[in-house]
Image (cartoon, rainbow, N blue to C red; front, side):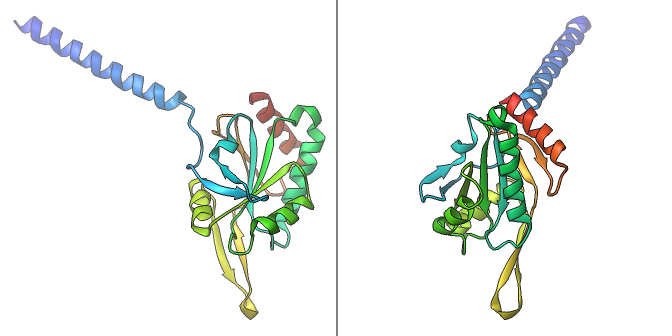
Length: 192
C-alpha cells in the first residue's frame, strides 16, 4: 500500500513539474507585442493602430514639434540612418509619436515631419489616447511650465526598436554613436 502512495505522489509531482516547465517555456519563448493597442491618427489624419508596428520592423520615437534640440536631431539622425542602410533597411518603418498632442495636430505633424523625411510617419490624436499609448510603451513625459505661460515637454529621448511582430527589440539612445545605431538597425532589419 505504501508503494502505491509513494508512486502516486511521484506521479503527481512529475505532472506538477511538467506543467510548471511548460508554462515557463511559453512565457520565455512566446513573442508578444510591446505596448498596448491604440487608435490614433497619422500626420495625414488617417486612422493608425498598433497594426502599423506589425509585419515589418519599426523604429519609434516619442517627442514633440516644439522641441528645441532632441527631437529634430533624432529625426534627422533617423532619416540619415535609413538612407545609409539603403536597400538593407528598406523594410524598416519609422514613426514619430507626439507627447504633446494638445499642440501637435495632424496638420502640424505633417509639416514638421515632412520637412525632415518622407520615411517617417507622424502620429498624434486625442490627448488621453496618446498618453495612454505612450505609457504602455514605457515612455516618460512631463509638461514643464515656462515663463510667459508657455511650456515645454520633458520626455524619453531614445528610439524604440520593434521587430516585425511588434516585440521590443532594443533602443537607440540619444546621440548614440552612429556606427552602433546602424549596427542595431541592421540586426533589426535582418530579424524582420
